Length: 155
Image (cartoon, rainbow, N blue to C red; front, side, top):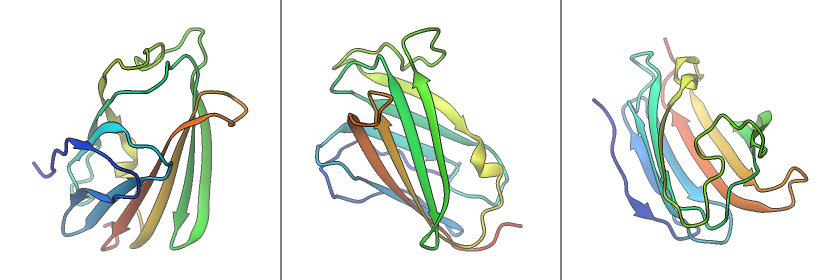
């Protein structure tokens, strides 16, 4: 099984490799100005076997998560390709385990990333993930900048 497990207490601006293989390389940095207690792992680190990626996340938030809105901005070879917004926690009938977590509690969860089924053309992808504690997008409490290099076209 391909993949690495990183336990990192990040400092802003420091790039960390999430995984690297013959066909794929993924790294990320925090794009906000604060350090985070954060762990993220993806396996397998490849598009070649056409499987779903398994991801694990461990994070200690510095504020309560009663409302959570995420925004993904995706660029391909420097051109904006997609923007996606989703409210994950609203305080009513929330389906995600992260909803309702309190400041300082450890979030430890595993989930599938189904995008691994997508055939990504060779090139550079930049993904900005922003997390907000309000719907107006004024109170950002986390920002991640993922860089993905697809080294060969998927078959």
